[in-house]
Each structure stands twice: as structure tokens, then as C-alpha cells.
Length: 261
Image (cartoon, rainbow, N blue to C red):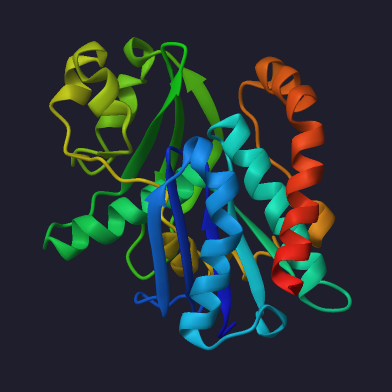
């Protein structure tokens, strides 16, 4: 896959990148405020990046996006826009690659950690603020010369309940704590986690480009209709989904019309 568009709107930070799958250096990148701004900024930013790179939407091999967990509104925005872009791109649609946002956090942390010359531990624990005094958490395994791998499913926990057993790897090294969980809840984490190496990484679109080849090889690509959010806090998500349904439909239409224009 030589031409991939990657998008993340799962946090208060909007991240977009164009590049070849697996390439460490994107062709074009946009980083800016997300949250309430994401729905208005996303499609114009994609158009600018495509023009900057000299690419067309129809020429994309795939669209990768952060499917969650994360901000419910942000995830619905991403899904709606990605669906619109994938359908508008060409007859039959552009393949879509959902990327777990906590896996993207771990990959961004790995990239930064190794770029700083540090030796990677065998485990990364990605912890992102989920609000309501909770964090989204995932255990991620690292092996040299291999893609990062999620161990089990992401879960939700209070800062105090972050499993202490995960802080030390089987080889005795300390696990790397990635994400904004430590910055938000640092004083409430178990002492072993407060002493752990930490990186305040976010789920960057460039990290999704690096993850794309392995995820594609695992058969995780879907069609436009398969661009759906991954919720961990299901009960709240269902309530939010009801409120966002009409807005999501409008965003999908806007994405389709905006790119065709």
C-alpha cells in the first residue's frame, strides 16, 4: 500500500497523515485542535493534504482511522467522515482499516522511546483518560523486528486499579506506561506505576501508517460500512450514539460532497 490516508479524532487532538503503509516518514501531516473543532476541520484538512502531496482521493489504497476507544463524539465524527470519503473515492469504495487507538498510542510511544535511544521493554501499557475518573487501558506486547500486538481486549479502570502485575515484565524490566493517563491521574496511580518509565504519547496518524501493513496482513480491512466505533463504556456510548446519529449522517454527506466539489 503506497498511498494511505490516516485519521484520528479520538482525543482533543486532530491528527491526519498521508504516506506509504509502514513508512516512518509521512508525505504530509496535519496536527491541530480536535474535539469540537474536528467535525469542521477534518474534511478541509484532508483536501489540503491531498493537494499538498499531489494525490487524489481515488488514488488511495486505503483509509486508516482510529476506531476507539476514545471520545464518543470524536469516534462518531471519524466514522462518518471515513465512510463518506471511502464511498466518494471511487466506484466500489476505498478499503478502510480500523486501528485501535490504544495500539496507536503504544506505537507512537515505541517510536518516540526508541528514537531517544532507549531499549524497549517487552510490554507497553497504554492508558488514556476516559473521564469520569477512569482510564481506557490496553496491554501491548513488544518483540524486536515484529509489530506491536494487543494482549486481550482494552478495558476500563480507575487509576488506582491499574494492575500492578503488569508493571514488571517477565525479564524483570519495567513496562512502559504510554498515553495521557499518568499526566491526568499520576498521583492516584499505584506507586509501582508512578515509578515506571512514562511517555505522554497520543494516537498519532503517523503511528497508524506504521501499523497499517501488519493490520492489513491480518485481514482487518473492511468496506465503508464497516467503519464503526469501538466503545468500551457501552452504556454511555449507546446514549451518546442516539444523540449523534443525525449529526453523523450529515457529516457523512458533507464529506462526500466536499471531496467531490
